[in-house]
Image 1: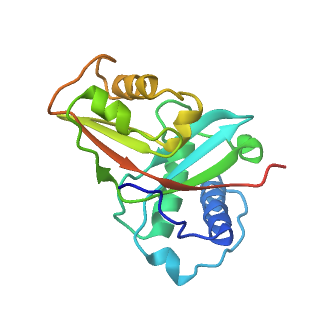
Image 2: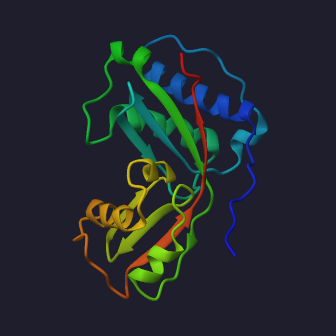
Length: 191
């Protein structure tokens, strides 16, 4: 039985992750950034997505699906990538950082979600809880659990995920693989 795992990061730790992400972007822009603590838990492997928004609109989102480097490196690298290398947006400009909100999502390890068919997949999805990875041959796409806010119906969520992977929204194959993960989401206090 799949259950949502207990949080492993405190609000204080989450606040540090967000501050580290913002500082990495500021340094890349040549702006002053505070020296932040670097406790030992930051050197454990971790996978994060960094999401940037401006007035509620997406401005960049890049991340790692699996832990392959220390958490601090993943946060800083994905923060810079979300700000400057998301192909959907131009690089973040110097004057944009002050109006950009930063969110860090720490991912649990992905778990395979075997399904007999699409109806079985739709029945197993947990709206608002599951982040989903879809793989078909060389195509791969993911939606963070936050995407359920825009696509609350499982059929709609899965159809858009297929589109993101370059597949037809009605496509289904026995070779299609789904995995799920959860996130711990941390964002800056709203000013």
